[in-house]
Amino acid sequence: MSQLPFQDNFQPYLDTLIELLETQSKHNAADIVHSASFNISETGYDNWNGGTSTWTLRLTIPPRNYSELLSEIDEVVEIISKTFEPVWSQISDDWLRIEVSPRITSVKHKQYANGEIPKVVRLNILDGLRIDKVTWFGESDDIEFLSRIYNLDQLPSFDIRYHTAREDIFQHRFNNDDWENDWIYEDSRFQLLNGPTDTFLKFLCQIVDPLTQHDRTLVSKLVSDFNDQLSPCGWALVESERVAGRPRYIARQEGGPTSTHI
Image (cartoon, rainbow, N blue to C red; front, side):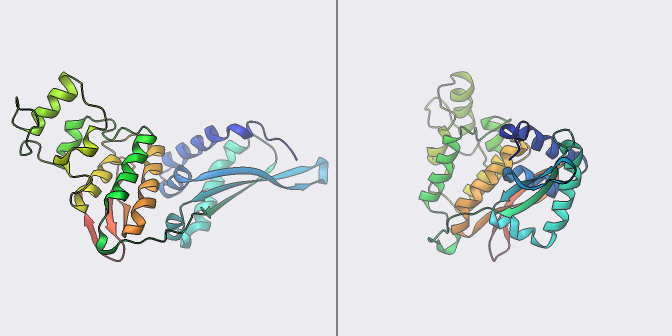
């Protein structure tokens, strides 16, 4: 078996591929590479003319994404392969095949009725954000983010010195800076754990909104992680439009109309 240079650090080459696809407006292909787990290995050898190895780059994506792209998967693979050619030629003279496959996942046996998102699922999602150290307000700030979902001037303050949630947040997040970044997860005013489903979904959509999060790789990962948890509840975040080439998401109930907008 050959050893491919930088085989153990292949991510920079994929990052270059993503940038090339984005600049060519090949957004579907770029999103696949963004969301994929990858493995590259030697899968063949031809000893003719000094010998040439064949390498296979396997990109595995969530089954839901794969099913949505099934009718165009060959075309997308061809786009990825052709775009990657000038990058690969700088790495090796060997042959390269690219495959896109569904990621193997465990079957979720528990399903939730009526489209409700129970507290245990909400906690799992929020705990995942904590574990991955994702800041929910991203490149904005608490007030800017929350104002897109709530009327902060109508929500009460928990500090007797102030009247509104806006004043409360400004004091404790900007003046005193004595609230942790994840303060909102258990703040009853914002009803993330026990409130309406659409409020929680709007919160998730806002986390991955282009105004909030600029890191496209992180956005793809978050959407995939959210959908893994939301799927048993009958919900998924789906792309609704693009803003400056970046996807904006809404929540859609499986088997029903799109119902959550931001």
